[in-house]
Length: 184
Picture 1 (cartoon, helix red, strand yellow):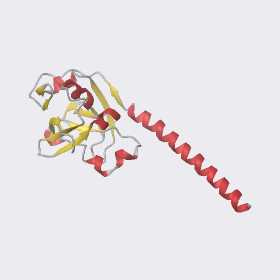
Picture 2: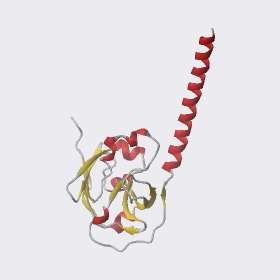
Picture 3: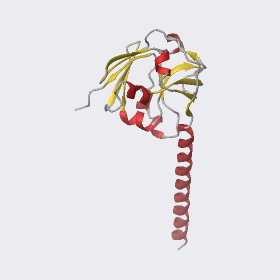
Picture 4: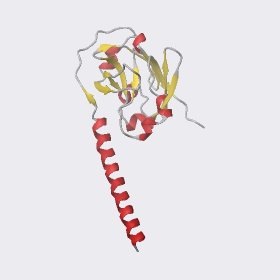
C-alpha cells in the first residue's frame, strides 16, 4: 500500500513538473518570437545588387535599400559564434519571398558567395520570423563580416531549433535565393 501511494505521489509530481515545464516553454517561445520586431531605420542609399532571386516573377535583383523597403525588423541575437552577439536588422525572409512570388513554394535554396547553399523549407518561414539580416549593430555588413546578407533564426527554447540539422540553415554571405524543386 505504501509503495502504491508513493508511486501515485511521484506520478502526480511528474505530471505537474511536465505541465509547468510546457507552460514555461510556451511563454518563453512567445516572448522570444517577439524578440523579432518591426523597427524604423534610416533609409539606405540605393547601391549595388546584393541579392538575386529567381522565381515566379522572373529574376529579381535587390540592393540593401530595396530589401529594407519591404519592412525592417530587428533581432537581438546571442549566437554560438564567439563575438557575434549583437542587434541585427533586416527583413523577414517571408516578406522577401512574397515580394518575389516564392512564398508558396515548398522550399528555397539559399546560396552564399563562397558556394555554400542550404535548403530552407516553407514550414520554417511560416513557423518562425526568420530574419534576412542586412545590418549588424546598425551598419551594413561587409563580406568579411559575413555579409552583405545573413539568415538568422530567432532563438527560442524550442528543441527543434537546437538540432544540428538546423545549424546548416544559418547561411551567411547570402547572394541568391531560388525555389528548390520538391523532393520525389
